[in-house]
Length: 266
Image 1: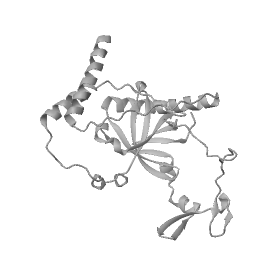
Image 2: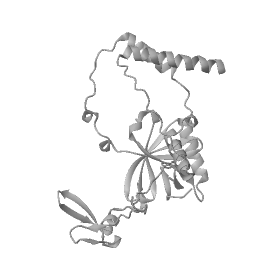
Image 3: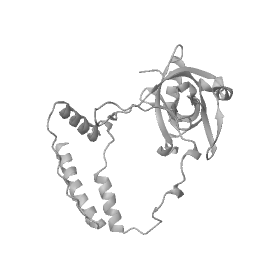
Image 4: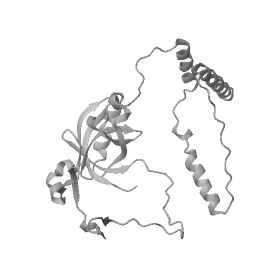
């Protein structure tokens, strides 16, 4: 894996030198845009509409639009003046909390941390202490000139850092339109909904979930490369079940079949 950051975890007066690696990867199928007439990849060039000419990267500066059409320029020197060397190279632990106290809406990106140089002993100590107490750490880190709040936790045998959003970056739920207010729920429908949840409850196994769309897309691409004819799938029959009770009953029947089959093969 490619090392994307080097620094240390600041745990009180203890510093643990670490390397950071991206824990996830984007596996989406990528396409290029081609000119329809000749299948040549289309180029995207940077053009100034005022000067009506192509411009190079070194001619581009960063500007913040504080009013429509008005910009203040921010230079590399300005960013350097804001940087704090200690903060830039440190994962500063602020507090320890319970993981259950953080709603998943706050989580952003995940990174693996490994010890470097002489950090193995302190790394194991922090990992063991966090595992035994069941706590995770809230920390701050600067990645690519951006300060992020982060959660540091133990995943299997590895310390994992997950950047999390600041409270003002999470939109208020009051902005979500058409959310039903507290309305009475029919007891019979509620009982059936709970039963349906029970029938669909499983032990989480990430290996059972597959991106079928990506697999189908790659299969379609393979067939096209091999010159095979592509068959269009027939349109699925749309069910217009509107009645909640009817939908719940049909769902329960279907899940009960799966539950009985699972028990007989278990």
